[in-house]
Every structure is written in structure tokens, then in C-alpha cells.
Amino acid sequence: MKEKNRLITQILLEYHGFDVSKYDDTFLNKTFRKRITQTLCNTTEEYYTLLKGKNKEGEIFFDSLNICYSHFFRNPLTFAVLERIILPELCLKTRYSKQKEIRVWSAACAAGQETYSLAMLLEELKNSDNEKINFRIFATDQSEIIINEAIEGRYSYNDLNNVNLKRVKQWFTKDGDAYTVNKELKKNIVFSVFDLLSDEFSCPPASIFGDFDLVICANLLFYYKPVYQKKILEKTGNSLTTDGFLITGEAERHILTRYNFSEVFPQSAIFNIGN
Ligand SMILES: C[S@@+](CC[C@H](N)C(=O)[O-])C[C@H]1O[C@@H](n2cnc3c(N)ncnc32)[C@H](O)[C@@H]1O
Image (cartoon, rainbow, N blue to C red):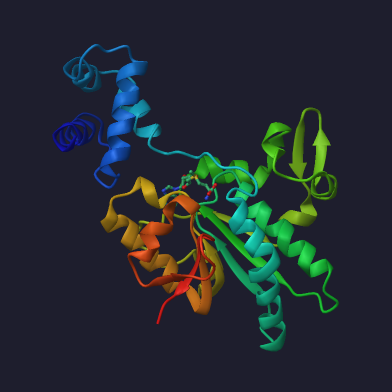
């Protein structure tokens, strides 16, 4: 596998200028095997020849490494713990510390499903709280195309599978076959393009100073090699307040336990920085 990946990495860089060296070996190999099947190549050598040619295959291979799949309230246990324990606790903390607002970073937000799920929970808490706690969510993704989709906030009926009817009625407007997120839900969210692996900024410039109570960075770590996972975890971890929470995907929990993070509830994928 390693030798095949080395060759693919070299061809993509030499012939198309794409650097895929940061991607996890198993993921790269899976993509490679998928492209062999989809291009109907009979052998790996045949595929290497295709990839070296003047055609779109290099771009197609590179694009298929950027998985943007997401859905509302993905990882049900995580969202249940957030709704019932973590977010109410943050509201209390914010009120007693006289902090201006709860600050959240949705760090690889895809087309906004994760961000709007969090916003629904926070709006509901805010509306049930007499003292009206404020919040702001900074939502980022490396892809400008996907950020524009998130800003638009337009989804199909099937996309809303995990959103209960009450929330659909309250937060979306039906427009033909599509459902668009209402302005009311968008008003506390700032979307921007941000590459978690870039050395330029430690947190989204729109947030100015980071200091987040909660960062959600879910379902992207496992696409990267350990050295890049560490870099992303350092960046997101360093942007937290002292007792802030870092959330990953449920399938990525084992990555955080390798570093100095402790899970606040078993299996929840919600962590804070250990002692
Ligand atoms: C599989 S989606 C996960 C979306 C969402 N967090 C979730 O859990 O459903 C992965 C997202 O991570 C984004 N991404 C991948 N690498 C990134 C990076 N280096 N910086 C910022 N976003 C990145 C992709 O563009 C994609 O939208």
C-alpha cells in the first residue's frame, strides 16, 4: 500500500501540481482503488498511465479526497449530551461570569448542517432563559464553494431527516422542494473560509482572538496523517478557553485520547484538555 501511495502522490504532484502527502494512507489507498474501478482500468499500471495523461483524472482524484458529506444532528449521542448537559452548563457559566456571549467555532462545517444544528440548540436555550444569553458561532471550512452553500442554507426534504417537525417549522422556510434556513437562525453565525492546516492564522480572523467555549471539529481528522491530526488538534485545542470543550466525530475519539484530552462523558466525543 505504501509504495502505491508513494507513486500516486508523486504522479499527482509532478503531473498535476496537487500535493496529497498529508492524507492518511488507508484513505488514499481506498480512493485509489475506487478510481481504478470507476475508470474501468484493469491494472494499477493502466491507472498510473491514465493519471499521467493530459485529462481530468488528476483533478477528479484530488477532488474525491475532499469529502463534504454531513447531516443535521450527526452523531446523536454527542448532540444529546450537548443539548442536555454541556450547553445549559455553558449558559450558566456565561451568566455568572458576566461573559458577553458563548463563543463557538464550527471548524469544518461543510454545507452548514452541523452549524445550524448547534444554532438551533442554542436559540432554544436562549429562548427558554429569562436572562437571554447571547452566543456567536464562527463557522469555517477550507472550501469556498461549500461555505457559500452553508451561507445560502438551502436543503432538500431528505437532508432534514434528523430535524424534528417542530424545528423544521420554526427554523426553515419551504420554497418549492427546498427548505431554506430562516434569517433568525443565521443572525448569530459568521461563516468564513479557513484552512485548519494553514500556518497563517491560529483561529478564524473573524473571531479576532479565539477564546472559544466550544469547538467542534468533527469527521475530518481521520482523513489526515497523524502529524496533521496533531497540528489540527493543537490549533483547535489552543483556541479554547481554560475549561472549554472540543468535539470530534464519534469515530475519531481514539485520536484525541492519544493526546492530552479527556472525554467528559464516555462515548460522547466531547473532550476537554486534561491536567
Ligand atoms: C466529512 S465533512 C464533515 C462535516 C461536519 N464537520 C460533520 O461532522 O458532519 C469534512 C469537512 O472538512 C473540511 N475540511 C477538510 N480539511 C480541512 C481543512 N484542512 N481545513 C478546514 N476544513 C477542512 C471539508 O471541506 C469538509 O467540508
